[in-house]
Picture 1 (cartoon, rainbow, N blue to C red):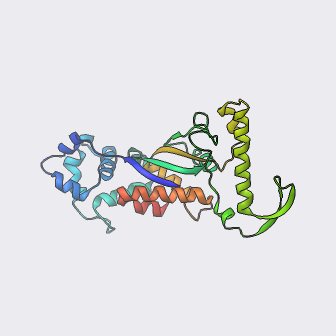
Picture 2 (cartoon, rainbow, N blue to C red):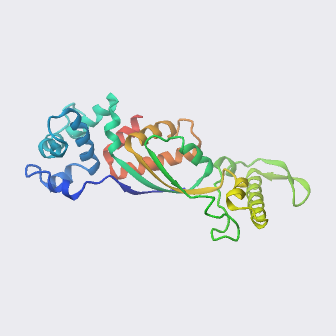
Picture 3 (cartoon, rainbow, N blue to C red):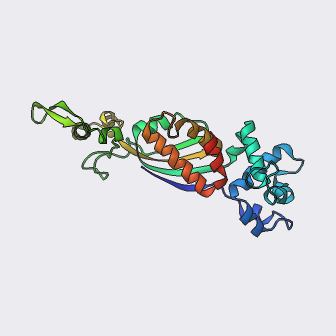
Length: 262
């Protein structure tokens, strides 16, 4: 699995230039990330008499330039963000979006991931248009082997079709045999003239795929709360949840506390 953040919410240059003489650009760069500026603008728009375009100019120094009034960590903006999350007014965090390249995950994971529909957008590598044959450009389908298979040292009787007899095999050997067989069946169907969109029916849930996913911060927090390590989720999607969290926190460090609390 490979997860990479390829885009996230940024301020337009016009907005950045119009923050006002009372709140200089250098100060804004040092005190707040783009995500924090957007979050403050959205939150304070709900409660302020100022217009959205005026929030940072007129209120930015108050929130980003002073310590948290609740005695907690960070600035008073951080205090505001904590209050909003704990009060459940997290619709204001939907304005922060993150786009990820997710590579080498199983179709089993994809089925679980796409159950999280609200606030998520997906563009997935197609098994209809990307042909998975051994002789195709892709060179046959890749697959994801669960750790419980890799780490299973117990050998069990298994009927080997090639040898026409029962012999002992490890779980990994059995799994690999199933993948090889699926590839052979797929190739045979394609050779028989079956369209790729129909031949793909024999490909396993372990078959690897790639996707681009965009999600807003509120939805990512909810996703993480359900799929994070230790919550009973299957390991592959728990690993994905952790990788997504790390990518978000890398560019918006102030969100770390909220991932920890969900």
